[in-house]
Image 1 (spheres, rainbow, N blue to C red):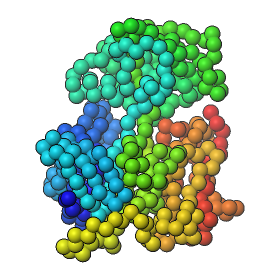
Image 2: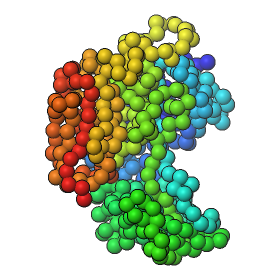
Image 3: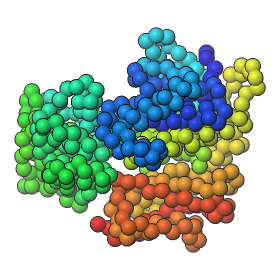
Length: 442
């Protein structure tokens, strides 16, 4: 059984940023576990620019963004294991992993940072009916085929969903000489960033069918066409609205799901709204000393904010270790699964020292979900996605009849995260923090 102070599960943008931050804040014994054959995660296949504008004040490709953090990891000599798949995470912070070189590995960590990222929704998740021939894949898979393997997966493409990966791939396929016949979106608006809709879809005159679904996939050995149909306000198919679009490839870009199987396995509390762990303002989960950050916590819109959040998690883990560090030479194997009195989850959901964050009208899942009254932070930043598109919007945070903060926005869209910062002193007497959005829905 190997003993490690801090284990970071995941070597993508979040994992590397968290490890680098923890080392800068004094943690020497760190180990990154990455299931792929290199650090960087999905950024290795993102050859488009738009990364790093917030974090590094540079316009970088995803590959360049990942390389900056990998350089930091190597310069700081932070150990990492590649091709290492974590198969079990226990509440006592015992990790079981496997890789081709070492076989079965067991690690006992004093602290853990969860940074496993997210995955794409598949065809099965969307219940798309029809033929099951070749040519149906997620947008991320197509991106890997094209940018890593050098293989063009199709020539006439229909994209279902308007997530950012699909929008970016639409532009790239056009630049590769292919035809993107349509983007089919069930909602009345795009699920991606407005800039991607403009630069990747509108600038290339790609048709977009809103309030629409794929009613049937046709083709035997390979996709030959799809039937597209309109849906009503309850997202039910409207008979008689079907029309056919010939294509040889169907890309699925209908949202991302945090990779929280290990989180759930460890018994960590999950949020139904975000599908990630419930965390305090320190990004600490319901198991003391286990932190979560990046897309495994909640799906972000920009990688810059993923790394920013991960750096905060690394710093918080370093503080936690300095306060809870085992004595030198200690070989105690006692479980730390039972919450300590310091834990934000120590008593109950409504403990006196906990202020819950609640989603009100127009607001998706809030992160963090809890704030400790005695927090050392001077201000707390909350993030969420609006449930609809709003114009001339007002974001409010209140506790009962007391308004804690009010923030105006010209426009809000579900494709972009909202960030609201509240001074900690305003939360000292709050019973809850309820976030709401008002404005003209468009």
